[in-house]
Image (cartoon, rainbow, N blue to C red; front, side, top):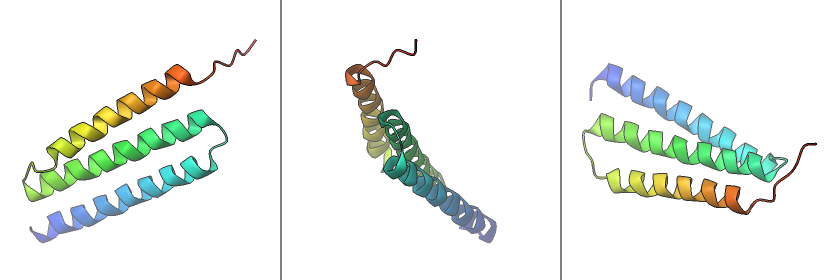
Length: 91
């Protein structure tokens, strides 16, 4: 990997790490269940983007099944929480 690509990879890693830390903070401090669910979706999306960037930098597709499983868990987790969370009427 060339020097500019190494710099891009390091900056991307730092930004992905910062996004993950912010999402974990919101999962811990979130005042409601919906805040925690959204934060977990953001965390899964951040991990998926980091894995995709790793695949692009290293020119491999070994982690593609992991990306597919993470996407499936993200969708199913959000749908299950939306299905079983009690509805709050704002009237």
